[in-house]
Image: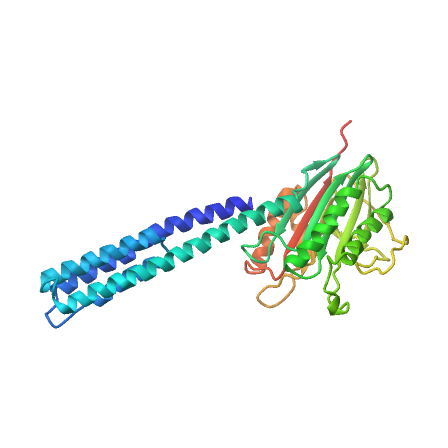
Length: 374
């Protein structure tokens, strides 16, 4: 969906560029006509250099060169109409116009080359996102699932926010998390957790064991030099806040472990209830010694209930008054919507609230329990 939107914006940009070509060609025509009709002491030819300069700001090198050639031809027409091509004044104007046209055409080539590199980099980033942050399944047993990733920067593909799902023999396990910081370091930490979850989520029978494996994956990466810079003396220690949920197919409950992450919200009959864990575990990557004492809490999750998982980029979005986004207050307005519709409306409302710009990346996952088929 995001790639489709970017392609559409690119097509609209190219279409707008064709219309912009009317500006330099119109300028050439206007300057030529006025210069031919102007008194002998008035010379407007120098204004023609603006045409290729304008074209170079949005057109490719070939079109820029064409605009420059037309400008040179127009200057020659003015020279013949007013005096002659051998007139010293017009000769210097033509030479200057040719030199400037060559220079701006070269700059247009450089710009187009850099844009091509950026396009290839975005394609690589999009491919990396599809591998690292795979789309969640729409159905997993009795669960209906939808997910949304919102990048703080328009051109960004992904950051440190993450989510994943895995089927076990008894139900579905879900992960949502937020790696500390931004950029490549955050993406690296997110990929570590996602990789460990996908490998172990189907194997481990209990959530504390799964949390231990996720923690071990981050600790081993740090020991191998994949973590923060050792010269930072721990001030830049990497960690990931996370929620890990286990939703059995045959029981109307959800079991979860909270590792320093915002609590999920349960939407039931128009009421919103935060699923607060009384004894949350530390974020992944902050435990010096792996401990089996991981608190698992169980909450009721009936048919028709919707769980909303989110990262702090959602609740930390601000409006023009710097007020935080009131997620729990807005959520009841969409009671009764299925997960894709709920997230679509929530996304639109969040972006409108923040004025179209989020201060941080945000991830959302909505999970609805459906009736089990007889």
